[in-house]
Amino acid sequence: MKPLWRRLETGPKPPEVIYVIVEIPKGCRNKYEMDHELGIIKLDRVLHTAFEFPFDYGIIPRTYYYDDDPLDAMVLTRYPTFPGCVIEARPIGLMRMR
Image 1 (cartoon, rainbow, N blue to C red):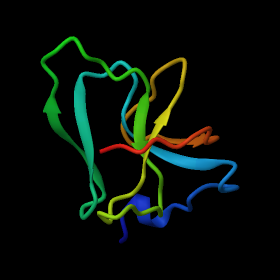
Image 2: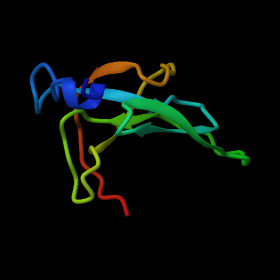
Image 3: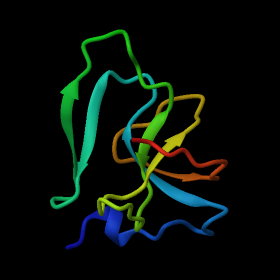
């Protein structure tokens, strides 16, 4: 079976409304990553600093960047969700990250 990020559509009405699969919830100090081959979210590392993610961070299904990874997404939410949660989101901008 294909991983969720390959099975799920990009969104119900892309590009106006997309899906984001959350990897790291807001306020979290654990760095999770999607294992693209297994289709699971696994703990990458624990951040031993005062840094907390100020937003839910995840990936957009069925999108690809130059490195063949899905595009990343930051979701502004009042309350955190959880790793693996699928959120409907409205894109408001694009940030080039290095």
